[in-house]
Length: 181
Image (cartoon, rainbow, N blue to C red; front, side, top):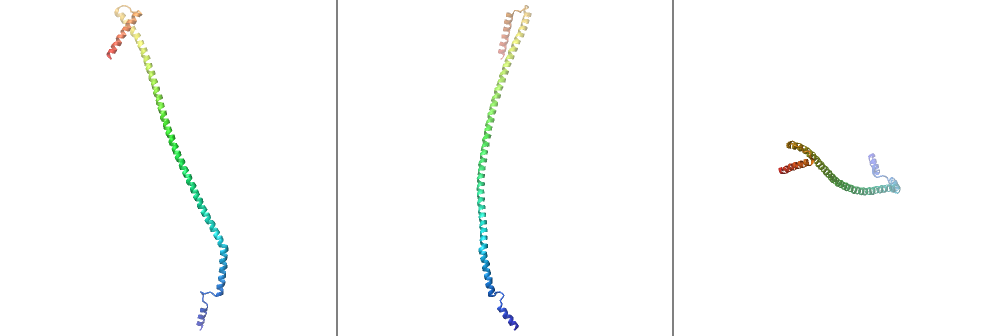
C-alpha cells in the first residue's frame, strides 16, 4: 500500500506539468514582462538600430562621395601631369632649337673670324712679300751695280742707269721663272 500511495501521489503530481495557479501567474508575469519589453525596450533597440543603419548608410554615402572626389582629383592630377609633360617636351624642343641656332651662329661667327684672320694673314704676307721684294730689289740692285761696275771696269753710280740695269735684270729673272713653271 505504501507503494500504491506513492504511485498515486506520483500520478497526481507530474513534475512536467505545473499546477494551474502557477501556470496562470507565470503567464501573467510573462505577458507583463513581454509588454514592458515591447513598449519600452523594443523602441529603444529599434531606435539604436535605425541610428546605426543611418550612420552606416551615411558613412557609405560619404565614402562614395569621397571616392568620387578622389577620382576627380586623380583625373585632374593626371591632366596636370600630362600638361606638365607636354610643357616639358615643348621646352626641351625650344632649348634644342635655340641650341642649334646658337651653334649655327657660333659657327658662322667662327667662320667669319677665320676668314678675317686668313685675309689679315694674306694681307700681312703680301705686305711682307712686297717689303722683302723691295729690300731684295735694293740689295740685288746694289750688288748688281757693284758687280757690273767691277766687270765693266767703270763706276755705275748714275742712278738712272742703275735703275735701268736693275729693272732689266729683274725682268729677265721673272721671265725665266715664269718659263720654268
